[in-house]
Image (cartoon, rainbow, N blue to C red):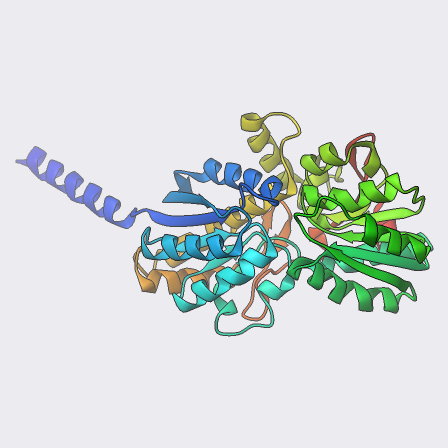
Length: 387
């Protein structure tokens, strides 16, 4: 009798555990193909590292490719939320696609964690953006860093060339006042498309203004084109890029033409070079080692790290949300949104995040470093030069 009672009790416990351990469904749409493929591929690869559980909470992860296309990104988001009934959406890789996705996330009241950079994705806060969170650093945080570095290097004139979309818009909008504050003159501004195969005309216009430095606001491998063209045309000034180029594919495509490039980046890019006192070093090294154990040496990138950090935020938020609502319900989506907004001091591979109702990225200067390209590799620049 006692054995039967014990068996029944164990069975009841197992059923209760299974009930409380219902999987959380996570949907992801990233740009595994198209112009932003060098961003989306490591993001998708990173998601596979979290295919079973996050912080003890069982999960199912569904990953789709939006081809770097906003229309496809919106369709993927709607499919994930409606057909796959996911509890949260991660993505996409680029600002234009992510901006388009906000409409669906807000309409369906589902939390979304973007892997794109522009602050416009999360601000100004409104009824739709209250559902959206972000792991990449805001462009303003990075623009201040790169302009401070220019000032420390006594740069007086700068020309700008950036994508002719929301990413380029965002950077031009934040870097213009930052330059003015440091008495650095913006002497020219040009734009180009992510799919362009030549930028000779815009580059020649910028060179005619004789800038001491050029800032390129692009991401992934398409950001190498203006710099290669500058080199081909004999430009001898300094070239700065944004954190949108921080991966091995940019180095591969740019080759010797991107030697000496200066840019702000997330600390994971040079995790092994960080001082032991840096709070992000351990998390950055852990991600790098975990990713490269699967994909090979030097394969980890900033973009995969943004994906890693989205899962780090979920690791902090899921146990909180699951206490108050059942996965697969509108109530759980709302509880997860609230839990994400309440995360505090989450140390991940790119910084330390503390969210609030007004701030859905939650980062400070610990989320950035200045780096250069030396002998085909990333090198951490002295901290004093970034102040």
